[in-house]
Length: 205
Image 1: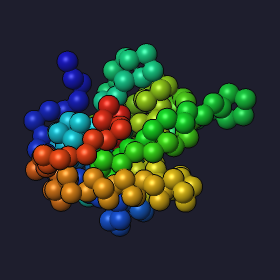
Image 2: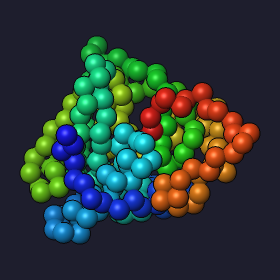
Image 3: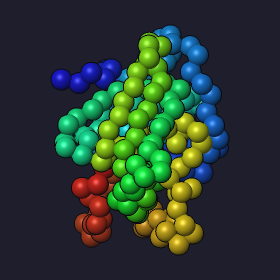
């Protein structure tokens, strides 16, 4: 059973290049009805896009909040809402990098390798202003770092070398015709000769 808010409406996902995606977002200070509606809509949008995480700026809202529903390395499903997140990752001898593939719902269809610490802990408050903390490894660690980055105006392309960023944008351009401008309000467009991605089983955030 999901612990995330339900009954939300699917919103269009904001793409890379929009200003709200590339600036530090505003801290959440009002935990009223407007925030509750936003979070429910973010959950609905994340699910419609088959993602494992979504930040508020990915639906065009300038607030430091994200939702996630993501498995850890052992396959344990972890869900949550985090406002005003702070991320901690191992340093020094405890730091191990995971060079797995990463994708972003705001650059749909494109994936590339992005080295990140293989463990992360995020602290903040939930949708009611109560303290929360989540930590984990595997895909969950990547998700927590990716979504916290969004609240700080960073997309994972900012962490890539020029070569890998060029490849990422080339792949995004290849798949762009499959994604309507209001996706996932409107579903992906299926083509008879549709190309297949090598990352169909890799979830995006």
